[in-house]
Image (cartoon, rainbow, N blue to C red; front, side, top):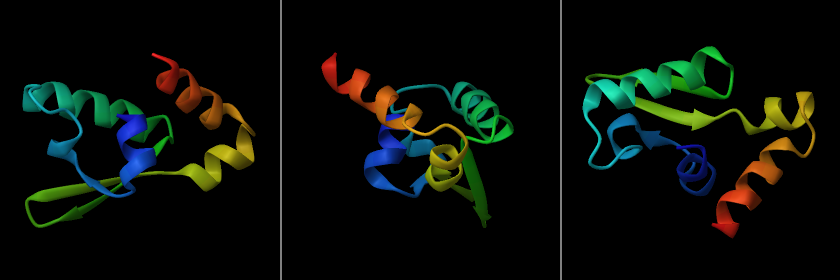
Length: 74
């Protein structure tokens, strides 16, 4: 999910887990939001989610880049 957000920016929550049950997507997006990794903007029946890259880079310099780089190596 973090990789998708890093590439695409703001994403509809249902686009973050293609093929996953909605309850699973909701659970994981809630965990990311509560951890401060993402921000959520409700709009009608949709939830638009984006990565809080500026805050993550400020608090944990280089961490997000390392996570994304390890994903690319797979």
